[in-house]
Length: 180
Image (cartoon, rainbow, N blue to C red; front, side):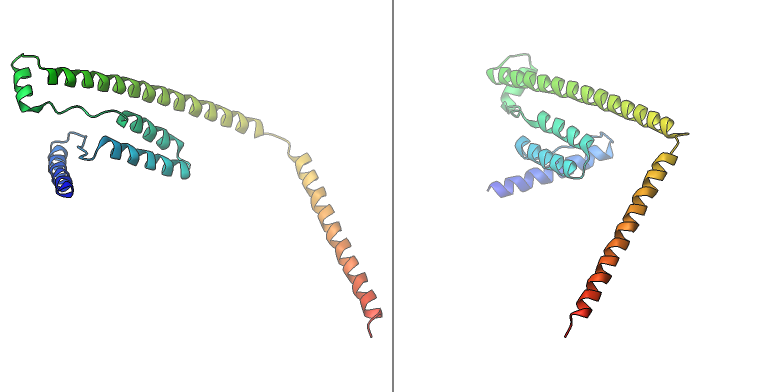
């Protein structure tokens, strides 16, 4: 059944990944389809955007782009054997074509990662420069005018509150005078 096959693939990936961790390869095998992996990356990207982590969202989108491709074809053990002996096969040709497209995708993704890293570094540099400039401008700034304006606003607020309270008092006195 399809479920049993999926369980076998998952189990095989778990065992292979345990070995890869043991020998410190730094990569893991994902037994799921490229489409399932891509959908997961896009979901994670959306979560990153929701929490405001644009950098992680961009990286996850790049990973999703890398997964947006056809899988390498399975050419079978006989064709592999012939290819190893130097005999070209139609299946081997198909695999080489697919592998060439995979390499092109990897080149595009590598370029995206480089441009993203450069852009992020530039944005960070500009932001730091702007913040440093702002901090420098604020050092030694005369805030007395701002403080005075703030005090005037607070005084107007207090006057408005007093005026409202006086109106309420007058209104109450009028109401008291007309009560039965």
